[in-house]
Image 1 (cartoon, rainbow, N blue to C red):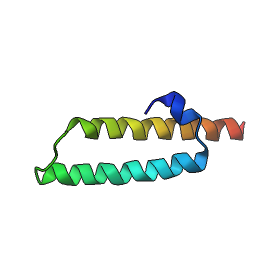
Image 2 (cartoon, one colour):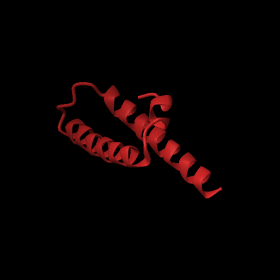
Image 3 (cartoon, rainbow, N blue to C red):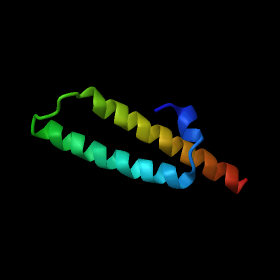
Length: 66
């Protein structure tokens, strides 16, 4: 997911997307622990998507506060 795509979404959409990504990360970590993870690079991608969403949420929070 690109940052440009994230910036076009509403705050509610971003919060729901963040919730879904955190659940996916939990499941991926669980699969890693029991050696059933097929693509370990997916963990890295999900973490980056979470960081991107949190960054955009913080940017909008600062912009609305100013």
